[in-house]
Image (tube, rainbow, N blue to C red; front, side):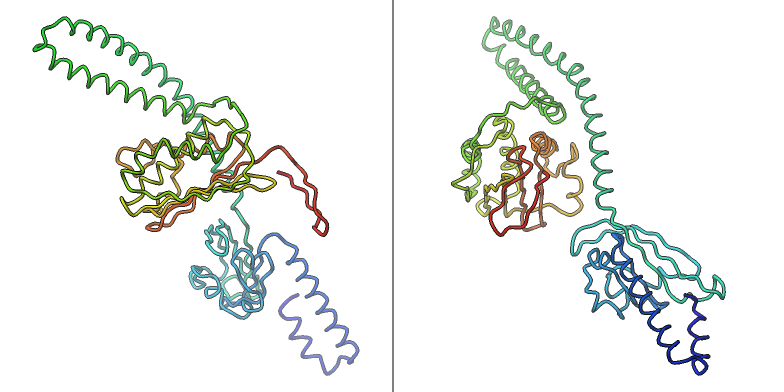
Length: 393
């Protein structure tokens, strides 16, 4: 409705019959209600603002994106309700703005907003009667793009792995054979002449073993593997992994607290691969702890759909700048780390149909949770009084 309509209506009120005025007001109310229903039905956020950036209307989707209370938001400046948006730098007569932003509350989302002035009859340079802001949720699109990029990166690493296995693996085997031949000849020398050469020979062998270990770790990180699923007791597997790490945990005086479900059913998993998962996560946890002050808490739970395994420490935590790259190969904060541990962990978990989540606060510790599906069940029976729900995965 044009801005001059109301002015003309007011000027003619004395000439309009009371019944006509009532009809016009009823029509305005109906149209306003209809438009509000349309805006509320949209999945995109809609915010209407006056020239000063005061919120005149906000729909349900926008309230969800920014954590707004519609009753409190209307009549308030946008910059006060959405911290980080400076109205003076955004609103320009005759200018449309499109920007991406990241929201941390009430939920971490990536949004795009489109701010456009409502056109006025006087011309583009005059102050518009208001603005409309349309907000779209890009979180899923961004996640899909990151997943595609990760897939491409792993495919490239897989091709590289094949070349590395051939170009480095064969020379390492050849070196090992020649060192064995040298060792046989050294045994024939007098003890005085043999001792210094044996030291060099031992060093060479250790370096070959180290290169071989790095090569195997790299290949296991990127090379697809065939799962050998068996019914496995997850609690027993965790105990076995802790037994392997017991000497290192004891030497650093690390306390381990176990909160394992006594009714945890067996899981259909590759036990060897999941022991590698637990080993990497526990080792990462204790390496982040201060000697004599550290604590690792391990929990297991299960419901009708999934297993939940959580490993939590009270260590140094992960800084925000490192959180975004913790699954990237060769990204590590450790002086002697390879940066492949978490990449291997996530690959194994995802090959089992599960997912891994990491929550960390710098200086307060890290919590890593693994969610592992129990089976291929797509429906479940509900008890009396429950709402019918279909589980689609």
